[in-house]
Length: 75
Image (cartoon, rainbow, N blue to C red; front, side):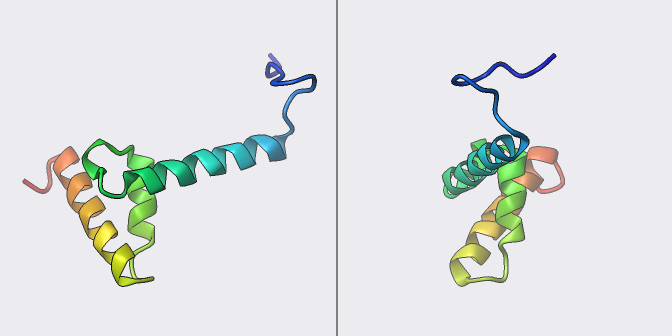
């Protein structure tokens, strides 16, 4: 079943990939400071940023703790 077109023509694979990347990036940015409600994918992206700067280290630490509390290995 082909995708429904957004406008006149269906999205290409590159357009779908770019749109997904933008959604993931937006979710990661919105997850900073709201780690408890953030999706797992955004928390993992925050953890990947550890070591780049002090700010990203702090965000990664909060993401790690939220991830641990969510799955029960940090109480």
